[in-house]
Image (tube, rainbow, N blue to C red; front, side, top):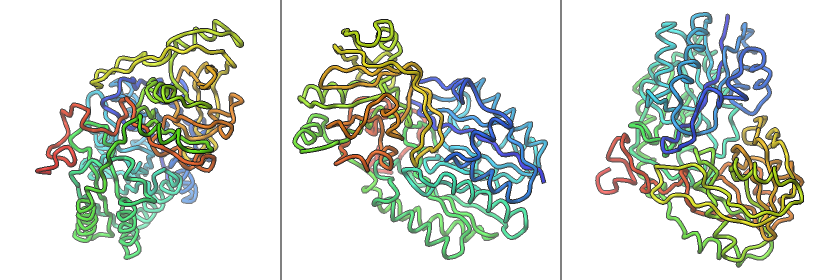
Length: 489
C-alpha cells in the first residue's frame, strides 16, 4: 500500500493585515519529500503521529508537501493553488492519504479552504481514503465531512496532544481500510462563537463538553470531537461544532453530536467573558508582591493572527510605574535596522511598534517612543522545546535586546507566540529574574511559562487578535450567532 502523508496548515484571521504567501509556509516556502519527512517525523505536530501510524501499517510512504504558516490573513491565491496542486498530484499516485490540516483556513478565493481542497482531492481520486488530523479550533463544514474518511481533532487547549491526534487519525484510517470500521460522520453546528479563554479544556465550561465526548467514546463511538472553532475568521461556518463518527450507524452519530451540541448551547453564557480595563489589570499586577507576574497581551497574539506590533500593554505598564519588565518580541523591522546601525552598547531614542496599518481596527495602534541602550543583537533562530509545538523552527530575523531601565524589550523582524522561555534565554535573558513578563499570547504560553511564574493577568490591549468580537465588522458570518446576537441566536 502506498500512503501520501502531507501538511497544509493555516488558521486564518480574516481581520489580520499580515499576508500569507507561498514563502510564508516554511523557511522560504513549503518543504518536500525527505526534507519534510525528516523535519516532522519526530516533531510535536500531528504529522509525526500520522507518519508513525503509516509506518506501523508497513506502507510505502511519501511526503508530497508540508506547508505550515503562522495565523494571518487569507491565503494568497497563488499559494493555495500551488499547495493544492501538489496534494492533488499525490492523490492520483497513492492508495490512501493522511493530512495534518488546521480546519480554519480561508483563501483569497475560497471561504472554506479545507472543504475546497478536500473536494479537489476526491475529484482527482474518487473514493480515496483520507484521514485528517485537525486543530480543535477548526471551523468545520459539511463539505469537509463529505470529502474525507475520518477527522479527529485535538482534545486539549493548550494543544498538548497534537501527535496523539495524528496517531488516532492513522488508527481510525487503518481500521477503515481493514474493514473493522465503516465510518459515518455527523455534525451538530452550534450558533456560538466561544471566547477563546473559555475553551481551555481543563477548565469549565469546555471541560464538560470534553468529558461528554470522552464518555461517548467509552460507550463505543469510534471518534467524537468538540471543535470550539476559530472566532476571528469571518466566514459562514465560524462556530462551535460537534463531530461524531460511528461504525455504520448515522442515526447514532447524529444523536451523539446533537446531545453534546445541545449541552454546549445550554452553557453558552459561560463561554463569554468580560474584559477588565487595562489600567485596572495593571494596578492589580503592581499590588502583587514577588514575581514574575505574567501579563498576557491577549489582543496581539500572532497565533491568532496578531501583528505583534502593539505597544499598548507595554506603554500602560510603564505609565503605571511598573519596573523590572521583560517584554517581547515586538515586531518592528525599521526599529531593528536603526538599532543594528547604532550598534551594541549605544544609546538612542526611537519609536517602536505600530508600523502596519490595520483597517479592521477602529482605534489604530500607536508607536511608543523610548530611550534605551542596545544590549545585544542576534539572528533570532531557535527550536521550540516546550510542550506546545515541540520542534517548531523559529526564525525571528535580526533581533535586538533594548534596555530602557525599567523595561527590557526584545524587538525582532518576525513573529512568534510565547511557547518557550528559550525566546528570552536565547538572548541571555532569564525570565525568572524579572518582576513582570509581558507575553504576546492568550493560552498557549501556560504549559511552558506558568511553572516559572507567581501569577498571570490577562491584559486586553488593542490588536487584531482581540477577543472583543463586537469590535469587528462582520460581513460573512451566518447570523444570528451568539453572543453577537444575544436576543435571537
